Image (cartoon, rainbow, N blue to C red; front, side, top):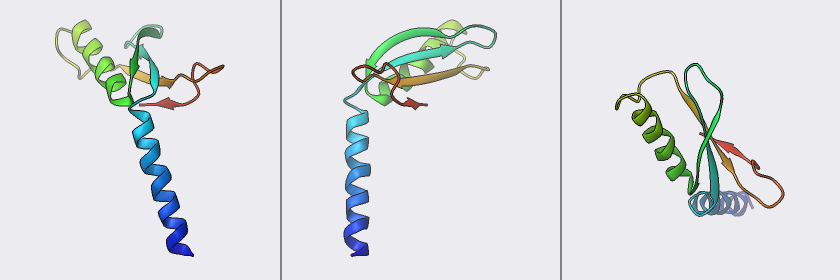
Length: 86
């Protein structure tokens, strides 16, 4: 029984990871001293992360190692930020 439960949990985790790369996300960016900016809408969580990093590099002459933050908001019907990811 424990093995069956463990396999079920593993299946949900794997399905969730696949879904994260096909879902749509809004990319919100926070510069060091500023307000949040919506910088894009992308497909996949990894694309969201890349978009935020590239935006940071573009705005800071190629340097991504400064004090910035981002959030990836999962788009779902009737909820534009159903889940937040980084």
